[in-house]
Structure formats: structure tokens, C-alpha cells
Length: 212
Image 1: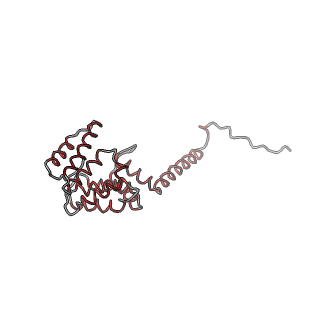
Image 2: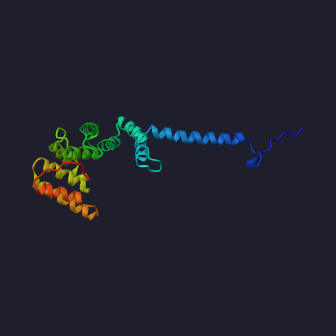
């Protein structure tokens, strides 16, 4: 007798059993679940997931979920996530406790090679309205360490201007603020705030508040 040969499945897709589609669905679900788990286990992935949820990039904005992922990444040592949390903590508030908390966060990561963390801490120390936190001398020390790498941004000159005004060096503050203003004009920014700070330094008054 001839050996029985198994015939290939010639059924049309619509004729196949529901089990075929169930398997495909399970495979797809498993793949997506693995992608999420891989991202959740990666610091950069956690931070970027938090950023996306915070800004609504490619998804609906959800601050609570965003902060969960940013805090998770920051707790594991991600400097960028820590800076994002500190900036979010500061917001536009003058609440002393929030300023203290933001400073504590930044102190954990404000060291080379984390230029953004060092610059953000320098800004806080130069411009905070909380006198017990303000430390313009240390702000200048931080800036000296990173200045050549971050001096393409008007904000860098503004931070240094505020710190120099904070130690009473108003001539140097005016010089830095003038450079920041010229850069802002070239970038076609609104410059009302920059001009206000320049006027304060020209009048030999320090300036404290939120840099915009």
C-alpha cells in the first residue's frame, strides 16, 4: 500500500479555525508586553516614557504616570530624569519647601559629566528667592566648570549675570546680561524679561526669580 501523504492545509483564511487567530493574537500581545517590559527595565526608556507622558508626545498626557516613571528613573540614578523632576518641582512657585526639595534632587547629580544638572543647580543657587538656599559664589564655581560647553545658550549668560550681581559685581553682570540679550534678539525671542534684568543690574540691584 502506498504510504499515506499528509495533504497541505488548503483552507482559505476565512475557513480556518478560530484557534489560528487566537494564537496570532497571543503572539502579538506577548511581543508588545515584552517591549513594554524591556522599556520599563531601561533607565533611558523609563525617562523617555515619563517625558512622553508629561508632554503628551505620541500619547495622552498623564502627569501622575509621568512622575511615576521619572521618579523611578531618578531613583536608579538617571541624571536627566532627576533634572526634569527638579524643574517640575520648582515650577513658578516660591514655596521654600519645593525649592529645598529641588535643590536636594539636583545635589545628587550635579557633577561631571552631567552639565544640565550642574547648570540647573547653578541657576537655582543664583536666582532663588529663598535667601537660605541662595549661593551665588557656588553658582559661579559650577558655571566655571562647564561654561565653555554650554555658552551657546543665552540662559547660560543670564545665570552668570544673576550670580555676578548676587556677589555685587554689577559691571560683569551688565556685560553678561547684554550678551544674553543680544543672543536672544538674534534668536527672535521676546526680550522683555531680559531687558528688565539688565535694567536691574544697571541700577546695581540683584535680581531673583524664575528665569524665562
